[in-house]
Length: 330
Image (cartoon, rainbow, N blue to C red; front, side):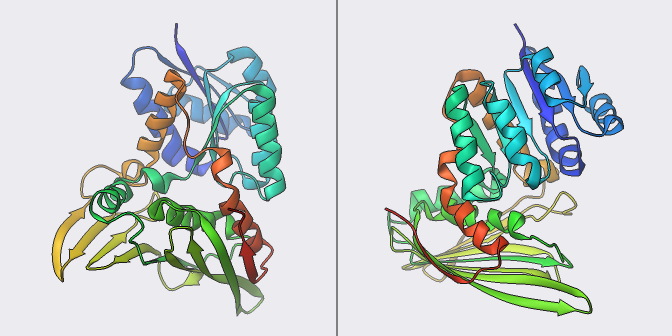
């Protein structure tokens, strides 16, 4: 019996990343079927189907789910449509990989958790930085060579050029999740500072977030959407050790990430992702494989919706452009 995959949303990121990753996964496993893809724009759905080898294309999510009865579904729709699309899938009990953010608010996140419970379904949130090769190397060093609870400081920068988005928080949530992944510890508190930049009739908000983890790690996030370049990085410090990680930014990135591990004022390790392509560097290939392998075996998906409450609470503060201190329950 075939393992059937369906795709909801056939836009730009799906074409650049999800489609190629799914096509590769299916090509290397004889029992996997790319069953159906769906988009409100039929031409886009038809083209996606033909490009990546899906058996059928649809414009109605319910119709596709009824016809295909998939084993796994990937949802990559605009953030305002994510909650509705995900609930349609979860209520019917289908396993889902959900593009970030997992809802626009804590309320939407709780609605999706309710739908998952109603349908007895699992969901994984597509925080692809957790599956980037350079981030996995960084995490392995942190877990294997840094003493537990010894990380004193994490500085994380997300710098973008000309992103005058009305709501940049749905991208910034990646930085929030990446810090939680690297620290291995939840936040106990976080203070959001909002600053406004203006150019003619445009306005953008940048953010600085100062946070403390349960482990004692102090975090500083600097999020600048209308700066002079595109860049993303993390620097982690412990006693006698520092880790510097350069993170690939987009599917248009010309190269992957890099990592430097400093110990005792000497370079202990260096790594640069010079092979592969953006789908690999950005972690979408690894994320897709991990999701589908877990869906096939019945393993627990990670990160799940229940793991995203802190990220969504802070994202909402950014979306509302609201400065202030947030305390998280232990």
